[in-house]
Image 1 (cartoon, rainbow, N blue to C red):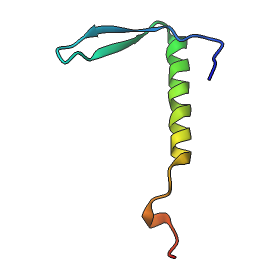
Image 2 (image 1 turned 135 degrees about the horizontal axis):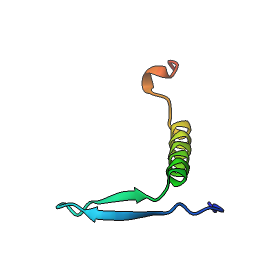
Image 3 (image 1 turned 90 degrees about the vertical axis):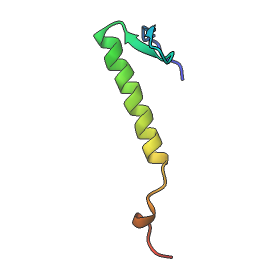
Length: 58
C-alpha cells in the first residue's frame, strides 16, 4: 500500500517492561496516522461476520 507522504514518528523511551512510546512529529502526521488507523478498523469491521443473534434462523 504505497503512500506519497511518509509519517514521521519514532519510538521514544522504553519503560521497565521494554515497551516503547510512539512519538509523532507533527499534528498533520498525527491526523494522517489517525485516518489510516480508522480506515483499517473500518475494513476489519466490514470483514467481520455478524453476531449469532443477528443471523436469521435456519
